[in-house]
Length: 194
Image (cartoon, rainbow, N blue to C red):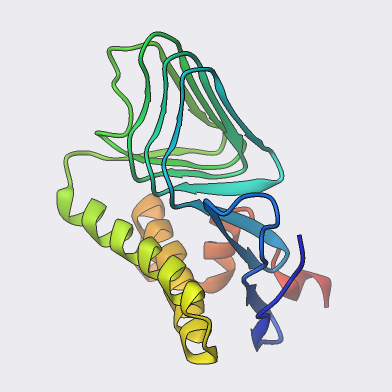
């Protein structure tokens, strides 16, 4: 993985868009050294799907479908699309936060979900789903555009997405600041190292 298009917003917050040499279905976003992988193309398989991303966070923008088992493990998992196994189990584990919409997984099937520091469910909120889907999709499209203005726009949209989701999770917008947003997503605060 090589880093490119790295623009420092200020001395305390840095958002970059590293290029993935491994998979074209991912758009990587680095923020203060933490990596968020936006999965923007469908993952479908007749066999098991294992996304072991313990050092990354995942934004699942595209559907993930398998005939057998699906295992997803990351720091944060934001599910904006369907995760479905035809005959097997679905296991989603976030060492920090799990955010999902009610349609993401079918609770009647063999689904195990856990966010160690919290789980948040957007229950029957199609407006929020559309908002976040479009926001993350526009980040991918802005980065693909490749111009400095589009990178700057993608940075702003990514920070907006983390802030608005943290606002929903915390439920106290009057107490929310950048330090608390970074903490909600388990992202290093560069102020702590100065």
